[in-house]
Amino acid sequence: MAVTINTLREYKQKGEAFSALTSYDSTFAQMVSESGVDVILIGDSLGMVLQGHDSTLPVTMEQMVYHTDCVARGNRGSLIMADMPFMSYGTIDAALDNAAELMRAGAHMVKLEGTDWMKDTITALSERAVPVCAHLGLTPQFVNKFGGYKVQGRDEQTAQKMIEHACELEAAGADIILLECVPAPLAARITQAVKAPVIGIGAGAETDGQILVVHDMLGMTTGRVPRFVKNFLAEADSVQDAIAAYAKAVGERTFPAEEHTFKA
Image 1 (tube, one colour):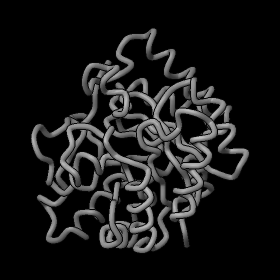
Image 2: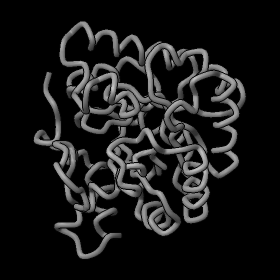
Image 3: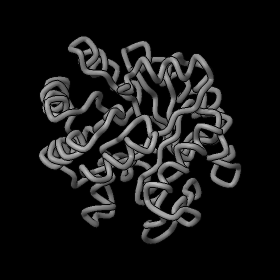
Image 4: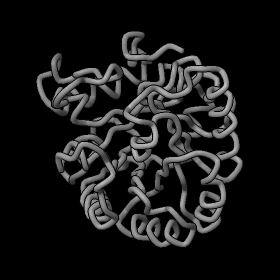
């Protein structure tokens, strides 16, 4: 049975953790979906892991549409989420046009990075049948504003603001909240504050779901390995076994462990 947003809502209501991974092509999409992973993200992270850029900013809409189409062809029942690349949702009209392209290519929902300034855009998308994931915390498209890739929400003032933003974006129509690189206690507070399923990456074990870049969980990270990454291929006999082990660990809440999380 295909995973839908209602499936993820039911997981949250039951307290069952769900798994997500990035994929960028048909082969990985089929392996990921057949290994029990609930959500596939076509991330603009492809700019770094596939194209060799030092950020996600160079990725274009044309490239995102291409990779979404590839993933949709290989998918076997996972929910497909596609990133809206840098400045593709700078205006509401641009967001509507570009989201439509991704949905036509096979996405089931789109993901946007930002805070309360996205409320009107999210509402416009939601009203026009486009499900939305709102990405908070470390938002890689804002790397130049942040001055690097840094944990967000470590002091109480910014933590409270992030909780408020999550609630506001949910009220605007966001179906999922994604938290990246935030302290585990803050992620737990946000997960409790919203009814929408919350996916974490570097956000502790108390979110409703977990996501990793597939290259990272297979030990293919180049350069510094982020704290929140675990190499599941190191203890598996094949890529498919490693993906299945990841999905199992997330479902049992044995991943992420304390060493994969950030404190305030």
